[in-house]
Length: 91
Image 1 (cartoon, rainbow, N blue to C red):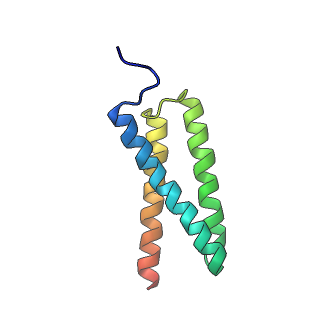
Image 2: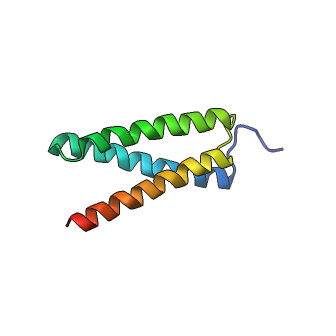
């Protein structure tokens, strides 16, 4: 029997996919506070993720592989890609 507390393989994938941009945004926050560059973005991005993930998980009733949660994850991967593009363009 499948225990409801166990995550499926797909749910694990989505959890990891959501954690990577969040951890990178926390790293960016530390670097930004140390260097003073991009401080507003570095403070805002983790906050947007916390409220976005929290709100979408609440509306999805905790289902990690719900389309709302998936959309949040893809949105933050796009933000990460745009941030990398800005860094590449600036150098």
